[in-house]
Length: 114
Image 1: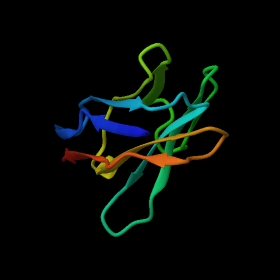
Image 2: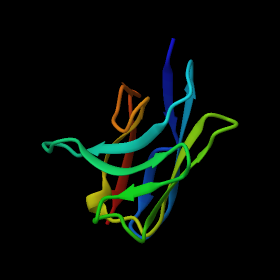
Image 3: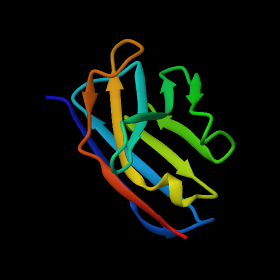
Image 4: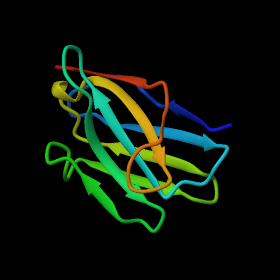
């Protein structure tokens, strides 16, 4: 059974940093990524990474966020620096066998205070 469990969310001041983790189990995935959903807004892509390390970022986080994965541990990470209040959202881990999501975690809340 596939499971994606996020951790690392919390409250941080603007300009601060957080590191999100997502522990995957039950399968090995070609595609993994982070999406986020702010209150009253649609879920949006943050960053994705393939099993060979090819990455993609939303323009809004380029230069501030870094996605990485440890294939041996089947764990996904998102290092978030220079956080802004507009980064406040529920962050969801996702994984898939192709190049799009098949599974989703339950999310972890990131709150950035001004």
